Image 1 (cartoon, rainbow, N blue to C red):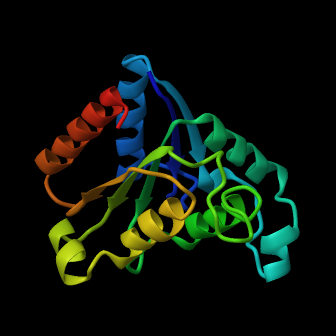
Image 2 (tube, one colour):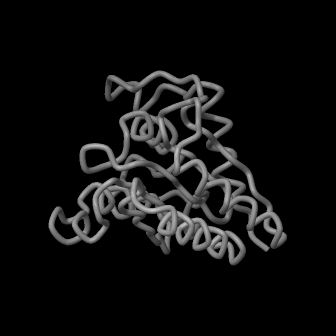
Length: 190
């Protein structure tokens, strides 16, 4: 069984979005299958955005970020849920990742991955209003590639798998299909 950390990257602290429902379906199925599940809701964390290289390189993170880092270290598999905003992740999620995955924790100043994240698997689940094929093939999915390769991969995580959930405002049948897929992924811990 795996230790799974679900990172909810939607910036709305009220919840109730389709991405929240997908994360709930994944978490419930994973727990029922015997996986250890921990959740982290970015919208409910209190942290400042980094503004200088000095802050990024040397200032210790706040307590909320340190707790998030410990959750990442203890997990074997990370699942990141977020809505597509302007072709990528919402700014709050990016700000969180800048805080959490900084030098000394996720990599050293020479650019080498640190051992605490190396080899952890990840899944990125992105919800969007457009068809996912349009995002992937016409727009090139650059925001997704940035997260999977330039952030998670750079920190030594892999494999990094993705699930693009398009047409989220479409039919109830399409939504239920995605809920069932998340249950299946959660049960297998993938």
